[in-house]
Image (cartoon, rainbow, N blue to C red; front, side, top):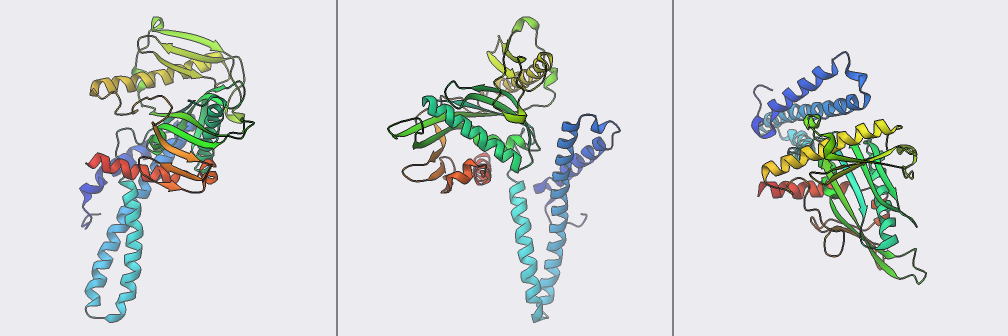
Length: 355
């Protein structure tokens, strides 16, 4: 890309080349596939970098070709169709480049943990939390995102009280950041014999899984470990044993639960990893003196605080209060079709970062 007509600095081309070289070097290592999950994530990330670099190279070539066609058009009238075709191709690639510009946050490329907690609304809220749980896992499945149910707590009558899911995918955090906040549901309650309309709330939290968090030291006297029976409504993704582990970090009050592994020891090890991640994230927030710069305000899931409303009655609509994005087909959204909300949020976030 030596005589490039594209401004290299805008697209950070050199940095992307170096990152791809590093990933290719890791993939060439003899022990690369010893950790299958990590290897898949690196392979996917490398493919993403290769895709954008190839797009930049192709776009640069098309700019040169278009310039030549414009010069020819001054002499030959029949070149116009070729120019129109070239412009259309050029526009499509610019759309792809625009999407690439959505990402630039410090943690955008990382894996993530998403947690859902039932809020105000009683049994309806518990059912709503389970509906959101299904919506996100459907989205993960449809988009090839690997995930693990770390902890799931069933409610007594119906639905769930809470669930925590780790998502291993390139740019998982950037993808899911849009979901952090309070989600509001309005519907005729299936639990109300009088068929009255009810409003339910659920809180969704998303945190990046920071790399090198194993450097965080946790002393034995700083934690309390509780063992309990796993809930078990998570299908093939959750373990139903007596080996679930909950760890409380006493100095910070941070709590992590894990029931994904087969043994108590494995769950303890996994829970400690997640706790280190949360502590590392909190330390970074404290250092920057911006407590909510990564996770946003942790607010009660209730009236007036929602980031997205899902209305089933008296009309059907899903509306994001930040971007004003609206979708009329609520069932499609609840079946996992949430890409429009994610992309519009990333556009909205980019405008905020540039202001």
